[in-house]
Amino acid sequence: MEGDHSETRGKVGDQVMQNPQALAALQDRLDSVSHTPSTIESLPKSVKRRVNALKHLQVRCAHIEAKFYEEVHELERKYAALYQPLFDKRRDVLSGAVEPTDEECDWHSDREEEEELAEELKKKAAVEEKKEEPVVEEDPKGIPEFWLTIFRSVDMLSDLLLEHDEPILKHLQDIKVKFSEPGQPMSFTLEFHFEPNNFFKNTVLTKVYKMKSEPDPAEPFSFEGPEIVDCEGCDIDWNKGKDVTVKTIKKKQKHKGRGTVRTIIKQVPNDSFFNFFNPIKVSSDGELDEDSEFTLATDFEIGHFFRERIVPRAVLYFTGEALEDDESFEEEDLEEGEEEDHEDDGDEEEGDFDPKA
Image 1 (tube, rainbow, N blue to C red):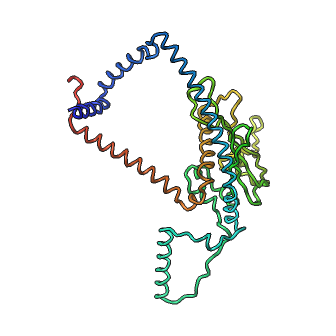
Image 2 (cartoon, rainbow, N blue to C red):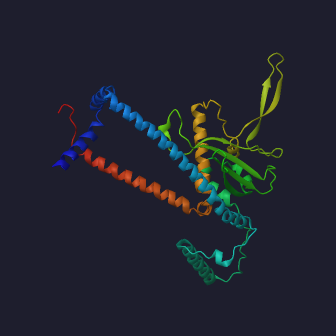
Image 3 (tube, helix red, strand yellow):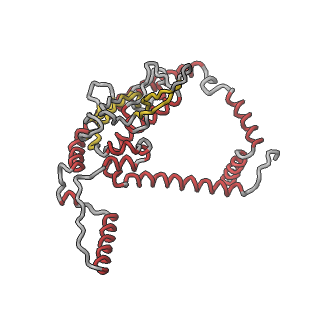
């Protein structure tokens, strides 16, 4: 019986949300409730004192939690040193400096078996048609355009990528994450290592993300762990005429008095991935307009994504397997949402809600 009542209340609730008059009445009720005294205000003074004591305990808990995250940062730094020899080997394989052994290359997956079978069938079909001279298979050095392929495949990075950036990123050899040393303010640095190229003189471009892992004295209960609070790029020493972050435009100006026309040439900012290394500066008072806040938040998200996903799992983003995992989660969420929508649609067909009833 109780289940029937609950079901009826759920159906009525759905119908109320679609009825303007009922919604207005509900809003009036909510407005009146919002002006009633809160639970804490209605408590006796002696109980309020004890609640305040609990809040002090909560602040102390937040400070202990901050210490916990500091130790987590230390563990990350420690294990980053253990991962690094493997990442260095990855870099050497990518560049062709090291050729992996047959044993290291022995990896079988369902996809590879399917590709091998398809290749065998193609070869058999070609032999049956006519005998041809064997085609010499190209054997490039290392794994060409490894990081550029990842940039193209990952939506968050491809949104930053422009056509004029691609020739430069073909020279990207490695991306590293460096954690701040003990005793230093918490931060991490992304290092982008490039082979010598004709675009800029730098061999390493860096981006430092500064973090805060302590409760805000003004809002201690909002603490949920370390957060990125600022970032710092680097100067790129571009070769002449190769700076893709600016573009040259010609503009005609007419003299008001003489009527003569002259052409001036000026440089203006240009969209490019390499603007990533020239982030918005956070002022000392921390005040930013809405657009700047959004840009900075996106920058922080990208930095975190490089650190947590791209660098540790680069090969899986290159093959697309990591992307398939991400898409699977999105599809599951979508299916669940669709099921809920269908259930709601079914409820609506039960009957119309009469606000006068």
